[in-house]
Length: 454
Image (tube, rainbow, N blue to C red; front, side):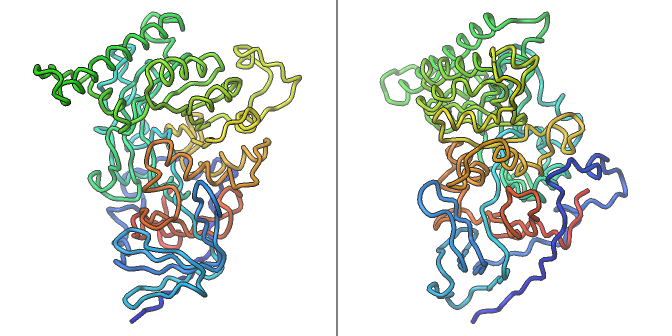
């Protein structure tokens, strides 16, 4: 027996096009901030059939959408999708008919610093004791459901990589979180999520100051020691060595990296350091790595990154202009504003995604707020990114999901994947679009009609 659930999804203006000053004030005691602790219990159906005017599947290859479609969800997983006229809804399913609204996968953000609950979290994730700190973890700072995460959720972000800062060349390990869940245990998707590496810029201020010559030497030295440590464990586990290695908590992450169970996420921006990232990490060390910053002239080595399978997850800056930073890459753009994503694309790069590098949740520290992730894609299109195959939307979903090795679970709406999806009134990369509902693992975790997050 089916029970029809209709929804009244009124547009609620989420001002993606502007940094809203309403988000700038931190909630204090007594302020109404809806979230897992004071919101109504999540609406959950073991079996849910979702009907919509358009379902954006956003698989990496093939058709990106279905018109007048139905998606069946059971126990938090997608069972099937198809034309509503062709897909029969079995008995026992709740039917959620969203009318002329669209359905799409939740957004995936691979450079976020807002897993912790306070504006001082940047200090907490910049424990720059040494220039390389591979053993440190960002996960102890996480408070699931904090107001900064809820703001991102209101903008359609369902998964983040919460990572250490860039005060040292290796800041430690990030953690992948599904931010709609109310407890850490539910939210943790993978830990470690990555090893955070940073080059040039911020790490140069470490102690008395260092230059790229020493940073490159020190990074190579740490990576080589970590790889050697991992190989000793691999030999022991294969039975080739009878002596069990002594465990080194600083280097344990390299075992996961060599197994492909985590990746190196790299705050790398200028052309020279993008080149060194590819050379040191992808080619020499043969570790999985992606660019998670990519600002300024990094695109000069876009073809080199593509050749060696290094994805470019770009942000927070998405344009390159004549000026101080252009000097580092000898950019001669004759005064033109260059779209960084478009420039990577012109050089043949095919795995382009977007990030905010959100630090404080409201933009007051200079990076875009988490809820403006979709605007990063919109800006890239505005500045030249060709979007004929919905590259903008795939760069918000399936590209980052595959980049961190989770393409089999998240990032697109396909049978067998997690039911992380949005209900919205159009293309999320259009700043006029409103995110009206957010579902994680088939559960309603945000409803714009019911919840205020600022």
